[in-house]
Amino acid sequence: MAQTGFALKWGGIFLLTAIEYFIIKLYQQRSFFRRTVEKYNFIMAKYPDEVHGQLMPDFLARDYPEIAEFGACYIDLWPISWPILATFDPNIASQYTQETSMPKHEIIRNQFRPLTGLKDLVLAEGAFWKKWRATFNPGFSTQNISALVPEFIEEASIWKKQLELIAKDNRVVPLEDCSGVDDKIFPTLKGAIGLLVTDWSPAQWGRLLNPFRHFRLRRLNQALRDQLQPLIERQLENHERIDGPRTVNGLAIRNYMKTYGSENTSGSKIDAEFLDVTVENLKIFLFAGHDTTASTLCFAYHYLHQHPDVLEKLRQEHDRVLGPDTTDTTRKISETPTLLNQLTYTTAIIKETLRLEPPISSCREGSPTFFLKHPETGQQLPTGGFILFAASKAIHRNPKFWSDPDKFLPERWLEQDVHRNAYRPFELGPRGCIGQELALTELRLLLAMTVRDLEIVPAYKKGDESLYGYQAYQAHMPGELTAHPSKGLPVRVKIRAVSK
Image (cartoon, rainbow, N blue to C red):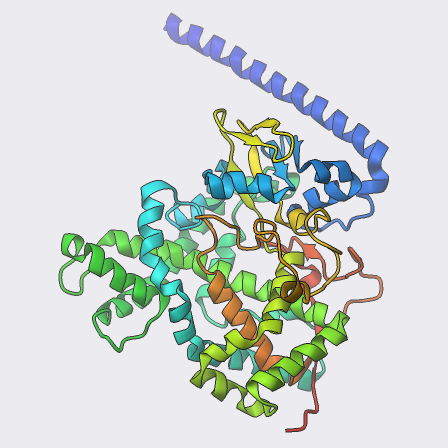
């Protein structure tokens, strides 16, 4: 009994000491922060409040050009987040994403763990990741994506009709709301993502302290499994059919059965591991695929409206490659999907949009034994205890690697040699996004089906804030993780009078 009292006594002392240390450390950090804000408030005040977090390194590089020139910066965010080593030089970022692929940081793993259990290709590591990346790779091949274009056309046609109805009603709507997926799965997925905690900032405390958050996440995860599992099982039944649908899941099933079938399966019955991992990856594929396409398309329409000369060249390319009769566009693309690959100026517009507005940046985990080397001075940069943040937004606008970095210039992709590591909207190296060819194909198709028939006109209010001269800046929207256009890009849609 005495031993128990002794342990409780010293345990209480330790707890009080830890709390006291935290309070002192918090006071010191917040005092420093307040002094910094008072001194440099003229810098911080010029940016809109809801800008996405990935823009912060870009702001830092603009306000302190010597940081961007050096190429890296240590940032202390305690206790809101882990300390960061932000990299602005692509030759430094490549050292932990390409030359050595450092693991995804704990803060990202903890963020998605309640959603996927870390069984997805974004966060899995080691042999598990290699096995499942190889399993899903065939479904995302250029050849297979091209074969799926007729199905993409069906979905895009539904979305285009929705835009035409908005034009008929003369309504102002957030364009991102129009590009949502019309099924039961995506709203369930969005609900689950909206419960994830991204950091320890005050804005997240409501979620952190919500006693029902984990219960709701479990319920939504079960709902997602109930919705996705039957789809996978139906594809499993047809996996041996040569003429069966060549969907991403279908090819993954075929590849898995070919490689592991004799070990884990019999007939059309597949092991629980495949079903479990496929469900978790479908969540990420659905979220990331729709999210990247929707936000990039919105930004592309905005830039095209701001640059009518570029829009005119785009329409001319579509007339030249697809023919002037816009009523025949979908038939031609469906019959010859490779026509999309001939839209070089369209692709340049998409790449330039992604350069200016990359959807998200990569966060890797530093190590006490891993050092970055400055490419010019040879200086060793320790990484232990830091988030290694490949600041793609800042890299994409670094004047050291891009001419006129803030200008929307699609021609740069036709006329200039781009630094091989300086363009990273899908990240580079072995952990590069598996769905980048899918995203580019969908974006080419959506632009080809809409820009000659419709005018997408941004409809921001006069008093709405702007950044870098544009009202459609990358913002953190409620319930979202990646960057989206502010206010969802409010637009009016007009039907063009086009002579056939």
